[in-house]
Length: 342
Length: 204
Image (cartoon, rainbow over all chains, first blue to last red; front, side, top):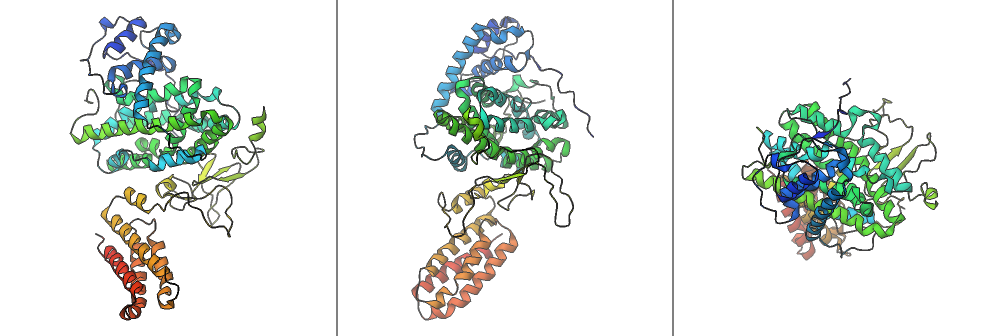
């Protein structure tokens, strides 16, 4: 019997160093004098806003105001109109970049949204990240992978919870069924975020929320910003639901391989539990999220069907970009983090 | 609030009428989802632990945590409707046979050899099936069909590949007299089957 981890010790995020004009403006608006904050060498703006370390960090922190306490920032800044205006500008850049990246769904046949989502996943040829972790990744690379994912997995399921009050009827009941399991089915120690924290501790990593934020590149933060952006806008509820469905549909296989990779490197159940749990859990969530939530929402609100498919395509595109980035950094023998782990 | 009523319609399977009702939903191309108070036992009567509710039972047969689903149905491109199939209706495939896409997913050269063999066996099967008049050629059809079934979706499992090779040898033996009589279709099928057998032989 494992003791319940004191996971509710509050999320307090230390502001990472200024990265460029976006983070500097944000810190000024938040009332933190950015002059006193450390400044990293300004990273070149990415080809797309999706790779822009500064822009994605500013957007991530705008969203973090809704998830966590930012150190040295007043809580009421969460609803500061000027901060929200900056966030709107950041979101506009993010949306523009996604439109470039995400293929237009003009070829959509008139099939059910569930069928279309299945087709998207079948035809997706993402980078072989999980196969690489399963068979070849070094211990250092596996640690980096976990550090990247901590940007989401220490608050796993939270972004998708924003949509609960915006759904109605059967899709809402189905979503809550998935979320209840994500949150441990009434057992705080089985919360997926808590299982991930255990994995991090088992690997000797710092499991405190936000501990590695300063090391994360924009391309990683973009994968989380995508969910928060969809989640915090009612008009994007379809996109969030499409994101959730494909997230669950593409989870069981990769998580089995991540677990295998950790076992290959000699790690035990305390580390692999998170991944093993997801193999079976997401095999259940997949059908519910695909048919009862996403397809069900499209039948109740046909006007959001295209948004559902957009959310699905955006997830696949952003995840593929992130996975390719990791593999390419590792293949050149480089760290995929802005500052390598010690 | 019309949607409240639809929650229990056949279109919304998560609707369970009462807490003591057991509902099993076969999802399209996916597992059976089981909701409600039900006990799972093996054939000796021992309870199988169920760690979550609802839970998913494997429907494609390829899960590594049977009887539970582990999402492998995606990898093997399992296809099945949610509604009942009727024995008399032909099975509409929503897209072309997934052999090539499967080949892309498989990794090892042994698996690639099996895939190649499977495709060649398919060709031979088409050749063999296309003759209506030659009973001697059609007689090998069951052997070739069985070889193909053994290879289909089985990856590099050694026993399946060996079984398929055995069946192919049988088909070649049966075709030999027709080949020496110079029957063109038999010659073509024989060539394909010999290639398939070689592929299976060559597995590292």
